[in-house]
Length: 309
Image 1 (cartoon, rainbow, N blue to C red):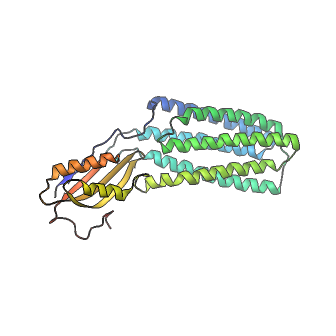
Image 2: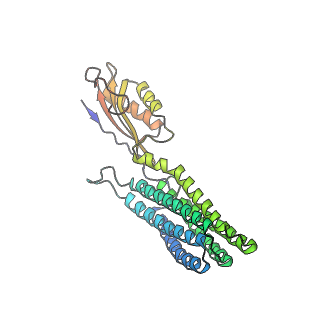
Image 3: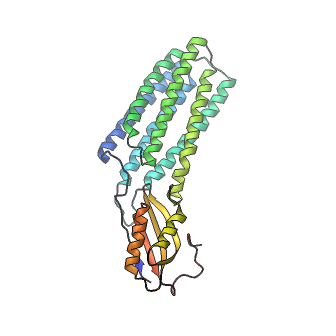
């Protein structure tokens, strides 16, 4: 039973328009700026007695940590495949994204808890300190967002780090609004209300993005590809009688792969059939395939079309 391990790789990896080293320098700069900001916000929050400012500081610390995790993952993902990791290290970026979304969710729930407590026990808040520190925070958030923005397309890892940052920028804007309202009207309840709004945004964004990350880790089929349509097209290729034991998954975020058993039509030759199937798969953007060729006589009996059920 001949095997065909046709690893027709595309370029793989991510489609950034930035060289990896330039990207690393940007992320490193963003990390430094966020760590400085965290210290400034915690000091400001303590002096002002503002929960939303300290909440924003914690969030900024998580920003810096998220960027450190994303930075490390980017570095590791560029390693070539070896005997230990035969698929390469690309998927570490997906693991990093999962960690960063998980921390975002924890932060979101923590902020809800703190805000609800504040509604029942309001405290005095020095509005003008909040406005100044949050204004500075917003500036840092915008700088970080600018550094990371172009790198998030096509990378769940950088997207998770970017979302930490976007949530933070929104937090800073909300804190400025809260501080201003407290200065003008003395409404202390605006501080916890704003904290709740920030938390709601963080939780909503994480809930939207997390399933994509989990899908890659669960070896799910690529989003936007209809598995049955791919199999139908393979079975219509010249020389193919049927296909079974099909697996379609993502090796990396932008690297779909397929393996399958192909049953040849009577009289069909293996090599031209493989070539025809590879051409069909290329039309779906699948560059990596492992195809096992069978004849009608040697084909697996009672085999599942998808998976090894």
